[in-house]
Image (cartoon, rainbow, N blue to C red; front, side, top):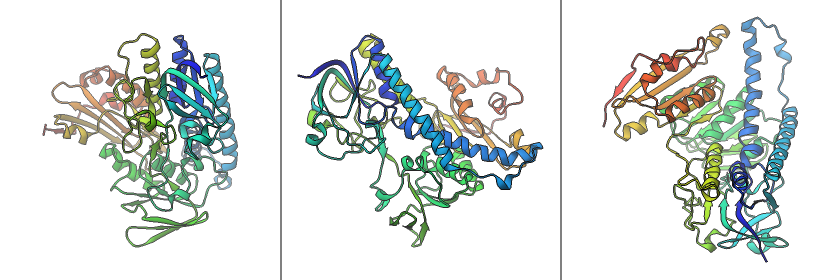
Length: 482
């Protein structure tokens, strides 16, 4: 007979953990099913270790810049030790997993270890783990049929089931890339290659291209579009391309390989221009795909889209109202804080009596941790133009005081997009040092409906880069409604 719960959460990543703990705090009996390590992509092989690598790359910049401030260092003897970083990173992610497990246990959530598969609309079979060592259900890729995955397992059921299994790297877009490294593998390296090709132009590709170039790797970035980071504001994309080039990254627009041949240490990329690129190491960063294939959703009638994402409404309900989904598995706004907010909102609505609790996905701040980093909230200029909004555009483009002293060419760019009719600030976009921290604070203002007049009435903190956002007075251009 099945063990009964009020909520079963499948996947112990950031969103699943947040939802489970909040539901338990409301008095629900909760089980969370996990096929690997607790913590999910962000904690174990995404945001956290990635930013730790960014810090490592920043220290290299700081050492080089220190001479401009009077420091005399034997820079010729300085080298980055990837194995040492790797050991420290592994220790930190292990510590964080322990923290997550403790938080769940202390919250009264039962951790059920194994792979989950629907038996019927309310019942889950939890079987033996089949994921690779260290992988979690939130990153799980199927390795067999339901009979094998349920062998020797446990049957549990619940009034509500929450799918929070996240996404994992796509490996089948380009022939041969199934054998190439992904971001998971990069963050597990003990030594860096001398040269690398990175396939893709999104978050993952540009972040690691920026970092590895500063850590001494000769990087080639191959992507489809004219500029990297499709979907972001064009002015940010242009300046990011310049920053990557200045860091030594070879940009190869329109040269996504047709296929990848060879193997570790000797890869050959066949390019659309008829040439080939030979490198010892390749990063496949061609996208991520929702982890739904092994859950048995089709058997219970939960609808998915062509990308295998769970189709949900604004309240995160699937086509079966008692089966919900949050985070990257829905392929809507694939950001860890969104998954966490969605999970808590679901728990509040189901068990806390909070009617209509949901997450507004229209205005979510995000960051790209290149060097320099990007911070952005709200639509880009092209999106607002397409929507027929009459805009006032304000810009600042300057060399930060820090780099005036060091002689580096790095610049800072800021942009405000203002609705000409209402004076409301609709978008904030920045590339430059501390952009994520600055935009996070400004996100509060945009969420509250701040106008350009509110920005103008705010007294600046000097000397800072952030003060430029409240000192923008000169109109860069007007964009009439289309």
